[in-house]
Length: 276
Image (cartoon, rainbow, N blue to C red; front, top):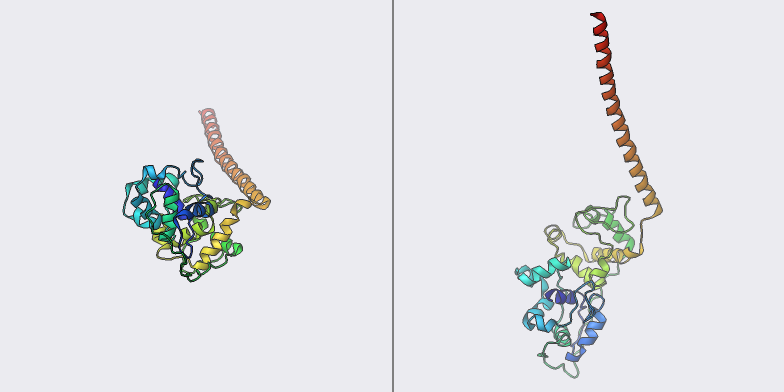
């Protein structure tokens, strides 16, 4: 169930102000139910029903607040859950009051201090830059270079409607990545922290800018709505037919040469027999 909290934290959008303990359902309904249920079975993330019976509060709280730290520590449960659900949980800077409210809603005893009656207004959060899907597509395919010089996404990944051959196969298809990571907040957080073992060595040295994160998120948000264009499909068919023709031609040439060699040997044998 650690993974449940891992992904739950992934879709928790840090909010301003304090959250009371009885706000947990609102937190879950607003931010978590896109990837999780409570008693309805696994979705993009695990079912969170009965979490309090399977994980102690301290572990669950730390996983919500700092999943990257828990995973990096080598925690066996965290490693198992990352393997099961296919992606590590990025650190979304979830606030303590958010975590307390959510944990209470998930069945843990309320240990949070009551929220003040008139909390001080928090400074407004800096809005994420608006993403542009076309710029994101250019970054994904390599039409535009990343500012820090990282490789294009298409080198390792594929996505709907891109390229006649669909892109790289080293990493997973990213058509459903937007939903898998809980929408804009979760996906941008993943692109910011890049917690994936094969990507981290590159993109932690050459991080994506906030604008690049937003553009890629906008592009991937629209990916499920795209399909391979008829032009791309025609190109793929043409490549397949062309490859088949080349293979057939090579086979014919090789077979013809073999037949010619056999015929020449037979002719020479007949000539030699006549000369005797």
